[in-house]
Image (cartoon, rainbow, N blue to C red; front, side):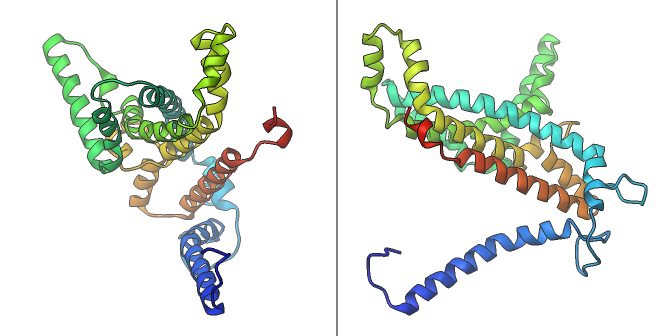
Length: 288
């Protein structure tokens, strides 16, 4: 809505009602999930039977095991954090290299390579996971049969989960960093090199600080996307299940409010991470 254009009062009220309905539609399931994490019931559903912290802190003595005493969920949480860390590190590094490749370099087939890079975004996650599993497992089996070498990293497990997530998260990191690099004035690098800096020094002292906001934003996005990914991860996971797969397996056995507690913890953690990533620098820092 353009505020400078006069509009009738009913149009403004309709627009406000639409915004309220939209945010209620988006937020209500999250609020319900968070509320039932404190319900003193063995099932995450109505009726409300009172407030309790059991689903967070119960040690099993009363028949309930809270999130912070559930070793399997805590182990899955650690696995997801480990996977997200490596996926973020690799994806952001490759994203920086890809941004330089597509924004600074000219070579035959550049457009085709760019389209090829975008393909993981339009491929369903399950299909991507199955394709990666078939390719790498087939490669590992062929190597084992022909040369007697065991390539366990190409079989279902954390290395394959990391490779599978990197395949599509790198594309998003590339787009974010490329958009920032496209606005960079190349003359700043040239001025640094005219003053005696090598191209590598100019990159780290001039270009990299300019790209830092985009890199941090891409890192936050990559971490969150890796942490919550299920479609690709479920096809590639081994004995060490990440949190999303562990929650799915637990849900098939029967839902309890401890799963709501996990969801609430993830919502708070995601909100904190996004808030940190979107935090504006102080004015005195930005002016330097």
